[in-house]
Figure 1 (cartoon, rainbow, N blue to C red):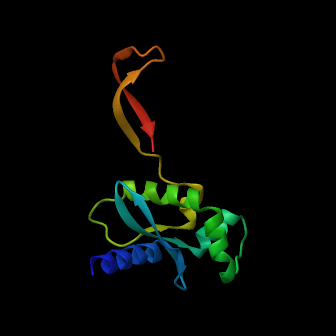
Figure 2: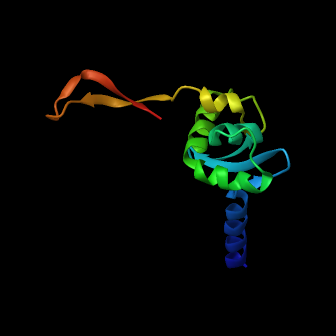
Length: 128
């Protein structure tokens, strides 16, 4: 029984992570900060990514897969600037393609110079 439940759970997760066209937008999930975040990208955003004014419905998934890394990066940026009280999927619109939110700045500890000596405790900053 536990094996069946585990296999079904994995299958459900695999299916839910697959991008799908729902008639208005393409839905997908990203993993960030240990969470699965539901997301969606509009047709106009996919068209903007491809540089075309029209993309046939049958070609939308191919456009998504070809730009998936960039799309997921934009979705993660939007997720990190969205207040917690906002519900629903992270949505990517055409304007987000050309003008995405800034990368998040994370302090990870004292900056270390190439010799391995600490640089006066100045925090090292990484853009994510």
